[in-house]
Image (cartoon, rainbow, N blue to C red; front, side):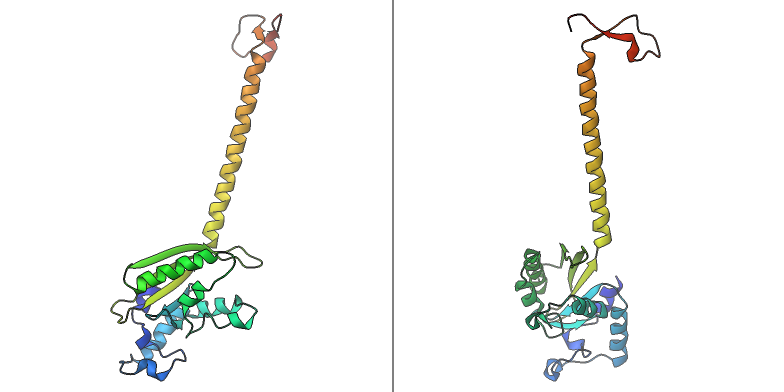
Length: 219
């Protein structure tokens, strides 16, 4: 996957695009500026929301899609702003989530932490993230950056709303079909009950319809 191959070259020691403290990079070998620029450009070209986290869960790099999504969906109160920027602790953001689907945020926190601690190689989570005017679903994938010491991870959020909506439409169609079949069974049972009191007025022939039946005496 393109985003992951690019991310393999990124770690907290390889990030200079964000406004981090110079002490973050002390004693670290920095890659060629041209390579950093190219990696950032490739990440920015990807539609998925991507962030690199250090071993403590701090955001050290994001792509344009991540920053745009954070800007468009940021809380209106000052306390919630900046929570998805470089320097913020993403584990803390997940842990402090409140309201709708906050339980999924806790699952995300635990999954990211498990990858950071080496207890899992990867982690995936599908979750709803509805806005005021649109229903949305996302798939989050977390994977460790190879040879990163301390261990760092790439977090990617894919928008899978189209797939979810298609699945919901399919479920709705299946429910309509099941309801129609149930109604057909009820009609068939009703017809069978009404035919129990009928007998043929002459021997049945091919092509005969209901007109050859008459209700028997005493019925």
